[in-house]
Every structure is written in C-alpha cells, then in structure tokens.
Image (tube, rainbow, N blue to C red):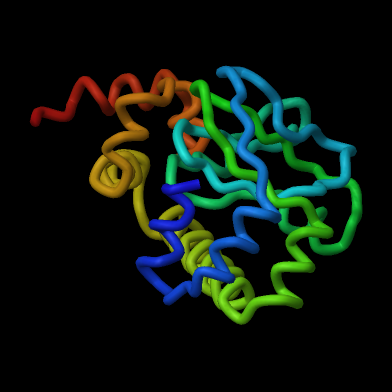
Length: 189
C-alpha cells in the first residue's frame, strides 16, 4: 500500500480520510511468475497497481501472441474497455515475475469516485499518461526502425530490459526475436 500512496501523493494531496478510504477499498494480493491475472473472454472486474514485479498484457492475433503492454512496478494496469463497458476482453494479463499487486474492484472503484475528489483526478491522470504512451508507441512504429525502437526501449525502460525475456521485448517492439538478437549483438555500450 505504501508504494501506491507514494505514487498518488507525488501528484495529489491526500487527507487522512482519503487514505483510509483507499486502504478500505483496496486489497493486496501476491502472485507468482506466469500466473494469469486475466484471460480473453473474461470481464475485467479490477484495476491493479503493481507494487512490485512486472506484468505483460497481450492478445492472440491470428494465432500469435502479441505483447502490447509491459507494465513495471509503480504503475496501473487493467483491460480498460472490458472494465469500463463490462464486456468480454480480448486481452490476457500475466505476471512475468513474482508480483505484489494492489487491486480495486469495480464496485470499490466507483465508491472511491463517489466519496473522494482525488480518485477521479488519479484516474484522469493515469488514463492520459497511458493514452500518451500509446500514441507515442504508434508514432514510433511509423517513424523508427527496429534498432531505433530497441534503443529507445533501453533508454526508457532499463529495468524491463534486464528482467524481461528477449521474446517478450521483441513482441512488444514488433520485431522477430532473431532480429532483436542480431540488433543486441550490434550494440556496444
């Protein structure tokens, strides 16, 4: 809970009552690596904050698993469309490492929005940050070659580069694993 509070308090001022409500409406869970948090066809019922660990989000596109999200600690994730619309998701979310997650159910999420001002601000800020990140990824796919995308990934996410498999990074960057291995051999630090 401390990591979530630190994350929020860097951006917003919380009262003791706000903190008490956040603690009341959230649950900490521990999961091991390779545990699926969500599978395609399910309806997302939670928003998650990663207190420690790494989670990947992916879809099965024409029989190929395509990694669309690599989420490291101190960030949120959910299948947003499924969570918002209460519709079956196309997404899978799976722990890459052992994780400590803070989860907030849909009903508790709505209670936080109704009972506090800060929660709506948090949701808007996180949603905008994630939207900007997605827009930048699209732009990168349009303007950068594979090596440039990988170098940018290393600069932006050095911890992920050390803790995530080449296959997952390659999929995330839209590169074949063999091509990424060749690129990695070319780079001198």
